[in-house]
Image (cartoon, rainbow, N blue to C red; front, side, top):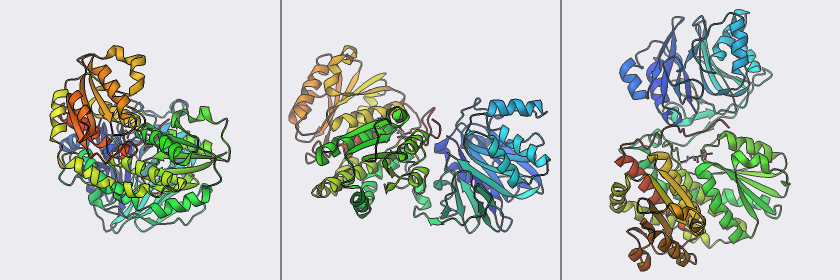
Length: 594
Ligand code: F6R
């Protein structure tokens, strides 16, 4: 839930401006503090403080630091309040070693106690501070930085991506376990980072280190060692994302940019048909059950997957939240295909579930980030082609996940005709984005609401859930997604004129029943905002406000289109409430703790 970067540059280039630029691309991973450490002439320089990058940079002028190598960090606090002392980089007591860390050291209390008994003094409340202290302890016994880091990781338990520097050696030593870390080979120098947007501008050739491999960056080379300290050759992969993809490009916020990129994301994801055909040919006939496993928005994409696969392929399909998966493993077998949906491929809950499923079943990961942990652990991988998503709230990655799921279901069930419809989805999305005035007006009206309900049936139910999640995340308004038919079994008691109800009512068999549910809330005084088809006169007459969508989008296709006005609704309500939709409080893009 933090972001780390390290770089060592050639030709005496100053590292701080590049570290600042790189770490600012990871602000979606944490934004309560920032810090940079560089080394020049065997002296360590550190600037760090609480606040977002802009605030701290205005105060400290972060780019103005000497030294051609260093490390940087953006923090999303887990242990210790967000304040200057708890900000990374953390240093050893003698201030010779500096470390940035993403993850959680689970046994830090015992380690800290032990080190304190040995005379080490601690400044912060963080779990991380034990790392530079341990490195320092081993270096005082004669180890070099590399072996001291190696010894340190035998002591710490938990999840980590670490980058360490010390005043006596011109190198960066980095390593990881259960937290992401990539290594970049650029013309200006060498990099480590939590995620590729940080280094896209400087390095496109990437190495993905595995658990407990040591990465040693010096001015002239990158050395990677396995857990037994043997030097290993790693594959270098080239990423085809451009640096501009990780910029706002004229939009006020990444979220709006990413909502607007959705038709392209769907189009690009549709180009992956051949890869899916290959996977299906390997598993078809060998499975009699499918389980989707995911969290948050990816879980909502999975719910659509269940309806689709059961309808089209007739294979019994379940959906389990990744954090609950370990309680549901008793009946898994080798005829079960477990599909993991994750935009980041680094979500800790999902990775733990994947590890468990790999023991008994076939596994498939649908992931957006190339080379991420899930892609290395699953038996099969489908890449969504959304490009980098920086806004914390998932939008274009959600539609890309759904596109991959629809393609998979169509190929698995032999329903090729579905591709004709899928190819039209980008056009339907663009039609919505052409004119969003209606949604902006509704957002003004709803900005003072305290609670919302979102209701839908069948394929519209996961849309309602996702609409409610987007609202909660970025507007801090309580939004509840409900199956339209379930409302009368309890929550209807809450409905009155103060609660807007968003009714998701695409054309299809379920529409008539949804209309009855709309009447139920309307007669209790609710203000109804409907999303439905242009030619649904009945819906138009019964709703207070309506956003109309092309009538050709029936209920099966609705998840790929109807979510767009709901994303926009949350976005504009957040803007009305003067909130930053890219950085919702308490949340980070990639959740690397269980
Ligand atoms: C919501 C959101 C989260 C993620 C969830 C899983 O907008 O982004 O709910 O969907 O944390 O993340 P991934 O898909 O990276 O596994």
